[in-house]
Image 1 (cartoon, rainbow, N blue to C red):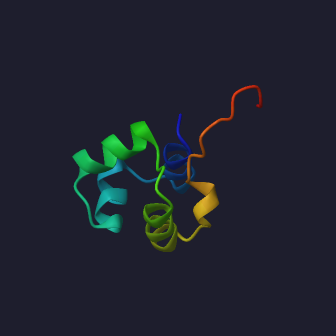
Image 2: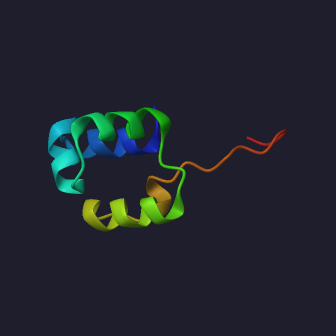
Length: 67
């Protein structure tokens, strides 16, 4: 589960409701929730609307050998 999906569930919102809040379609939101937010600018825009810090929803790449 991505950080964005966990955030949505903590907020107790449907994909449709959060998509409206973010100004995108449910289909686009669903795709981003599955893949995760990997773009810093997008994470900043979403975080502003979700009332959280960008780090809470930004998926950082894993470094080989580190957990």
